[in-house]
Image (cartoon, rainbow, N blue to C red; front, side):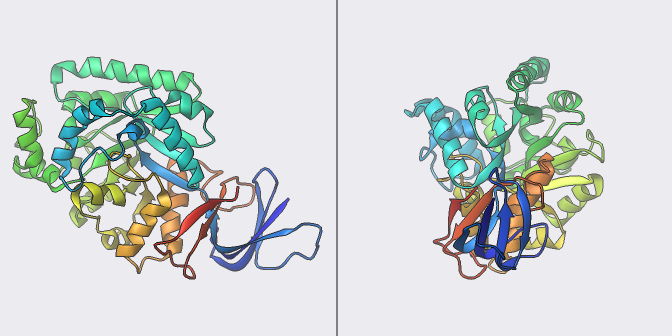
Length: 389
């Protein structure tokens, strides 16, 4: 047995405990937590300054893009960013396989215990099989050519099966409302019943412009490239009404990613339709690409289930959940660290159905992370992670 004592222990299934004691089995299983010093000296107490919390859950990552670090220019806007990825991906001189392995190890060292990973290929299968990090692979499809929907769907299902045959959980998902034809959307959803879904959602003003006004940077980009976006043009409604609400039942569990430009009416529509909607934010990527952040005060007012993602090393300099939290608290200092950690741990575990992760409830094995260099319960620019379990 181990006894861990810290300035603050934030269990997330109960209130924070100042100068608390966390009792765990040698294998990391939580026994109990209290603020009473042990009455026996049979066990040495590990004493730490800082915040102890469960391991982080990174709900949105692109591990495949880990070799693209420092390749993409900042503040270009999403349309230009997306258009440059294929060419920049080919120009990269780093070994993709080694970059994936290194990024996985860095996430583990950053206290991340589970990841929702966007996968367009099977390039990450081997690393995920051998990793101490728990992965769910979202096999992502996109395509605007209505005549190719069946081919794309078949290719995606083969990738899903390769992950599953390797003992890894995976589900088929759409990329974004603007990048799928209605035929492909319908095909993805028909093959994903009762499975976890995610979608990039309202990440940029040009997504709203495309659907509501048939114009904007995304519309211009697709037209220059000769893509058929006739289904998106003239739609006159928001992207959720195009890509989600007509297809999915109320009880579908869905993770909406980015939501940087979601207004109150957009949120209300989705929250009214779905009983299990989760809202993922990737603040460092949003800032990297468009120099904007979501309206977290609105999200909190709407009592949304918020999770944290890191996106990719094409749009971020780290895959660290703590660094995402630091950026949020820098710009929204009134959001308590305890609440941010619920986003970073508990809510993500709940979305994936990982009952053993996300909090220090007795019998669970969520990992144990120490956040050092804090100011009371407030994060600082120098805050960093040390993995204890």
